Image (cartoon, rainbow, N blue to C red; front, side, top):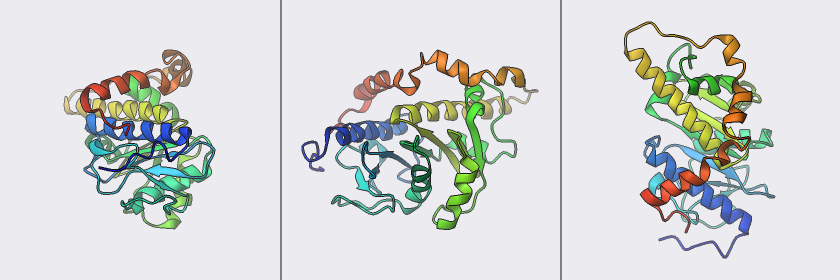
Length: 250
């Protein structure tokens, strides 16, 4: 068992660790994990350091103390027995480095997400979930496993100021000002893809949400979350996690 770091780090870092560990376990709980091969990162407040998963650990096992602290170059800045996923931080480092609001970056290889990422037209305006996603969605073409530094500027150019990124033939990515915000965005993104795959399987003509309705999405998203974004649902998600798979906050 990993030794607790609670008394060795700042209170801000510990809270970031607890939230990120919870996000990893929630991703596993909802079935979006891909064994050990995707990643979520969060910036530690008031520092230039980041937390990422210990490579080789299942998401359902991750704890606050097992997370690895690294710098923007992906180098460990605190002792850890675990390596990190090099492809994981290639994608995340460029987004964290370019966008001040990108406090948390979440990436998945969910079956529904990858299925829609392989469709030429991407996310279709078929559902209320897609309605919100389409208000801030970008696409990035597949260039192989994300290991090459020269892919970074193209990924950043494609993402721009958007909060949802569909990595074609690869998966989904969300950006948030907090772990809670990035998680809620991913929940909506994944749901939009699941609905689309199921709707397409029905074999009937699909009804698209009109463009004039789509234009209201950002404003209505703020209304339904009471202006709190992901923070509205996050405490309830943590209670759910505590019932299903507690023990992450150690």
